[in-house]
Every structure is written in structure tokens, then in C-alpha cells.
Length: 89
Image (cartoon, rainbow, N blue to C red):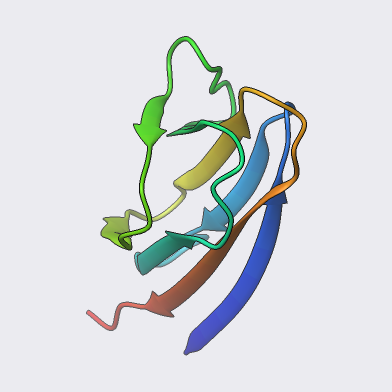
């Protein structure tokens, strides 16, 4: 199953995607580039997160039970487009 969404990212960590009980392919792309964004777990901060820069999409696989979060360094309401697809094993 494929799902799409747009998530607004601010200065509080927000969940972009979650794998639940089965692995998921995830592609994310910045829709707006107003602030610096950082990716990581639910405890992501601007100090420990992976910088998510530019306008190119980023694709990867979330394993079962994993979730991806993002946080911004400024409250500028950046938007991220998220596309997920469940992996069939």
C-alpha cells in the first residue's frame, strides 16, 4: 500500500513516517526550504540530528517498529512531502 502526506516541521520534533509491524520504503522531499531541518528518532534535536538539506528527495527503508522524525532550527513552518510503501516480504 502506498500513502502520501505533507508534514509541517517546526521547532518540536514531529513524526514523518512509521513502519509499524512491517518494513516500509520511505521517500521524503522538502517542499519549502525556510529553515534547517534535521532527521532522527523521537529524541532528535538540531544538535544530534542528520541535516536534511537541499531539494533532492531522500529514500530509505524503515524496519519494523521504526519511526522517522524531523525538527527545524527555526519556527518557519517548513513542509516535507512523505511517500511510503509497505514492503512485501
